[in-house]
Structure formats: C-alpha cells, structure tokens
Image (cartoon, rainbow, N blue to C red; front, side, top):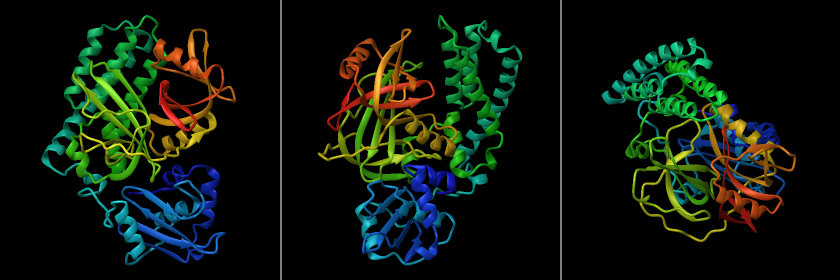
Length: 435
C-alpha cells in the first residue's frame, strides 16, 4: 500500500496528534525502528520508565502501541508509519514478540499483493478484464459525446426531456459496463419526475458524471488504488471470490453501529450495515441487495461478533463482505469515538475526502444533537446551532426520535452523505439502540 502525508494524516484522531507525530518522526529518537515485508515495529522512550513498543501491520492496516493513549493511532504509531513511508526503516528479521502479535491477530508476516501492481498494467491480469476495460473505454467516449449534447441544450431544457430519453441513455451505458453511471442517470430521471424539481441535485449529478469521464481518460496515470476506486465508481462489478482473493482481510471484534434498509430504483431491497472494529478502530460497511425473501445473515444494532472481513479494493477501505452465512455473537465491551459537534465530525470527513475524492458516505457518533422541524423540514442541530437535514425518516421514526430527545441533547449514530443525515440509532447509558 502506498502512503503519502495526506493519507497518514487522515488516520490521526486530530491535527495536534499528527503534529506531535511529525516531531518524533526522526530515526535518532528511536531505539528500534525496522520492518520486514508486511510488518513494521519500533521502540521509543516515553514518559514511563520503559520504552513504548509499537507494531504496525501494513495490509490490512492495524496499529498496536502500549502507551497510555487509548486511541488506536497515537502519535507513536503515526510517527513510525511516517518513517516507513519515507523508506527510512532498516529491513530486519522479525522479533518473536512481533511474530506473536501477528499470530494473535491472524496477520500474515508477508505482504499480500495483487498480481502485477504496476498501475499501467494492472488491468491486463487476464483477457476478460482487458476486454471489459476496452468496452468501458468505448462507453466513456460515447458518454462524453452524450453529455456534451445534453449540456448544449442548457440545464433549463433538461426538465422538458422525454422520460424515454433518459431511460434509453441509462440502458445504453449499462450495456457498456458503466452500471453506476447508468444508475446516476436514472436518479436524474427520477428527480425530473418529481413535483418540485431540484435543479441543484441534477446539476450536481451531471457534474459528478462529467468528472468521472475526465478522470477515466487519464486512468493509466493513476496509482493502483486510485484506479481501483475509479472503477468502483464507474460501476465495475466484483464477484465475491474476487474480493476475497484480493487479500484485504481483517479479523476483529465488530460492533454493529447502525443499519438501514431501503428499496432502490431497481426495486431491490438495499441494506447497509455499519460496523466498527474493537481492536483496529476500523469502520466498515456491509452493502447487500435482495430481490425477494430474507437476507442470509440477520444483524441487529449493538450486536458484537468476531469475524474476518474482506474489503473491496479502494483508496480508502470501507465496503467489505463476510465469507460466511453465519455470525457468532459474543459479549464484549466496546468503546466508540464520539464527536462533540458537526464541525468536529465534518473536519474528520473532509480528511477522508482529501485522500479519496469519491468518498461519499460515512458513519459516525455525534453527541449534543437535537431534532427540530423548521418550515416542514426535519433537521438536526448541535450545540453550536449548526443545522443539517435529515433524510429517509418516516413519520413513525420521526415521532420516536422527537420522543426520545424530549427537547434535550442526545447522542446519535448517523450515516452522513452530501444529501443529508440518516439517523441510524441513538445512545443511552453507553448502549446503542436502533431508532
């Protein structure tokens, strides 16, 4: 995995911690600083009599430090990662304690790499992937011409377009393996069919599609993880085995922080399950679709279970899957990070967007929130009176939220996107409850 300062900074709980990490990212301050394939370790003196011991797994990213700071990414872990990114660490034989830590966390000491990581050749792994890319290239060229014709008419004239025009375009680009872009065009058509058309949403979606087109035209210039993320955004479909074989696996004790289910434009039941790892602090999203029947695995908010998660290739690992149709629930105390207000959370979200411009949705716990209704719009406001709109909230769940709050500040588990906030759960007495 390629690390740059922006990516490492995004792992820091705050700017001050990262600044302290930079101050000690100096080999002269470390008594031990070494690496071996997939593992990095070091020792540095601290306020205690004994030196702090730091261990890092690169793939999947996992930190361990015995300093008093509870955060997974303390300044010592970040500093050692900075030294690793600068190629300043010596290559040494793996110490016994590091090997034991790796074994306890089911970590391979050898870095798992996809075949042929060179960015310009990463798509030629087999004939099928190459042919698929060529079909996508052809579709992107067609899409660019179509976008030019649409915008040449002017955004105001878009509303008078025949519904069949958009449906045909969506089908056309789906045939070119641009399924996510096809779905985005259908979302535009859906907005145009509403009673009050929001042209800001339409302009935003057209702009997002146009940006994808321009970036794809320079795909060979991107690094491997950036290429993978771009293909995800365009609509590449990955089979379960492809994700598992990619080697992005993490074993942890996972807390279900929130769950939502909605029917999408395809008539499929779309389920999002947000997880947080106890040992790694990693956030993960399980995204599943169902035509009929029931999901194989049932999840309830506040469930805790231990399992391997397999992450989809991306700049920022988020979407994951389970390689099992069963989970074994366990009893485990679980601490989770809580943001004081929207400003603190959005600052954290912005760091992720800086690393991955396509990062569009996230889960978090935010305290001191109050639901309110202003001019028939349901909003959440924090202690600083910053307001954000609530989306996908039925009347029944709205009444429940207002009843739970009673006009007092509460801590909520939210899913944030540019469209607004989806309330997933609420926290009382350090326990999480579904809304």
